[in-house]
Length: 301
Image (cartoon, rainbow, N blue to C red; front, side, top):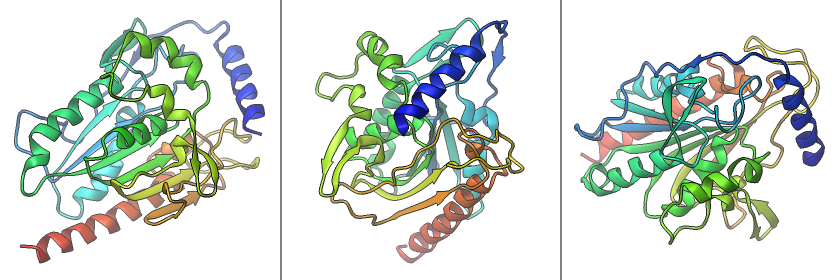
């Protein structure tokens, strides 16, 4: 079924791109305070990785930080700040490079290489403090595999929460094989192509994007609608062109600390929209978790 969906998506992208005049796409920053590694550490850092752009853009050249521009990062940050925390955010685009440019996207975007560099700086500074900031990962579409790969290759870094909004591996190798060779990470790491490889688990083979690693304390997974349905208030299309179906598990096949929400009205794009049922579910759960953190912090003083 996923192969059929992939072929449908490829056809849709090729048809949608034909005849569309290119235009400059401006990507505004999030409203929440931006990650500032030269200043004092906040209480919580939210790191967001957006997915593959749709027509008329040309992916991965035109991929951009949609989670910041759309307000998704702000919605999650607000749910944490409401518990009394100081929050900083950083958004990245689905691309192996640290920084990359497109003639149709402004400003220059930061990719996984930039995320990797930021996490390395935090490892060397903030995360060595007696009370380090909590790290939250937020990924949509192709952003999900990038962040599961990040937690996999940084096993010494604790992530308080990982949020998956319809993680998808469609076109992964086609998009990134050459770009990964041009933007190498340290040789000791597995290739980012492994972010979408199948792995052995006690319940059979699972894609790496569906595995929540032990250094991730909690995981919230959203999957978009599977059947045709009238779109909800977040908009979208009647027939969802792309969706995730496999539930996340731990490497031992357990579901400890994992919650899942399957949308009935929202398509692959709409699940990341502020005000959608999917993101509302995420922000309610995130606020509950942040309040638990606050209680734990107060009791440990």
